Length: 337
Ligand SMILES: Nc1ncnc2c1ncn2[C@@H]1O[C@H](COP(=O)(O)OP(=O)(O)OP(=O)(O)O)[C@@H](O)[C@H]1O
Image 1 (tube, helix red, strand yellow):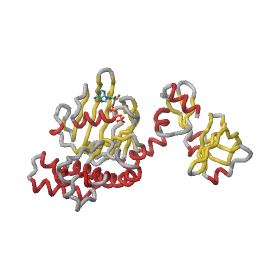
Image 2: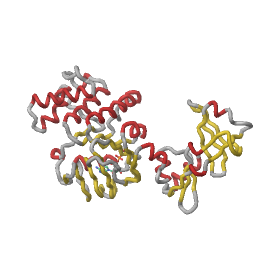
Image 3: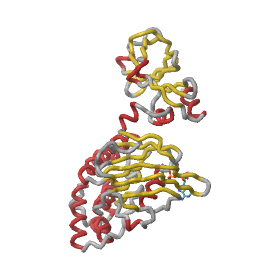
Image 4: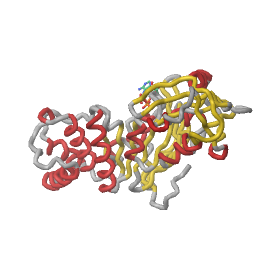
């Protein structure tokens, strides 16, 4: 599962495990992040994403495994010795410090002289487009501006590795959408490697070059986001990424039918068993021999329905055969839809 790129490795996590009491939070987790790369860890709540990040930051001590940065062993070191820039969910700015003071804090802690720390802080604030607000206090900023100050603070550390734990979580949908694009270009400009944790697929796809999908403490698949969607390794990953058509196959396998494998208005006609209007057209369920096939139709495609029937041709070559690793409840809820 290592990166196909030849860039040097900024972060290497090897066989990391961590439990809390009886809860296995992370198990045998290995991942490399290349210099300059942004990698997003994606997975359902409680799957261990933040624990991985906290172990990399040095805020948690792993039970076993190794964490290396640029080839140096970090596993036993305290957070302040790791030279990492961090942004956490609540972005915890110091309320009594100005914007400039907040951003200069990192370099100051790393013993940069005041003038040098402030120069770096101003540079970072310019990157996040907040020049001119240096003297405000956090409570005089909007949520989005505070979020950007937190980012600037991480960037000003000048570290080769940034850890971002749900960095856009406290924003409304509109602002999140705007900042997703900004975050991507910002990370590209800094050339730092970044490990981003999110439970939001759109965020992962919009910001990261590669996405790692976690389930129950383990990394189940890693690769560029569009590749994961086109070729999910297992039925659980397919379901998690939003594939609608996953059918039980023989011997513990499942068949995933991507929308691209379905041609409308060709082949045999099948009954429509359910129809729901959506804001972009309609969603219909077709009684297909493979299973109840759920399809999104544009208003124009909706016109292909004749007498409660729709012609559908499934390109067998486009159907994916994968191990069915879904629990009984997950498989049931999909089949029942
Ligand atoms: N300090 C702790 N003490 C006990 N259990 C913990 C602790 N921190 C995390 N856990 C448990 O470890 C597991 C992984 O938690 P973690 O916060 O890493 O998940 P996550 O994927 O980041 O979740 P979310 O998306 O909800 O933030 C969960 O079952 C959680 O309840």
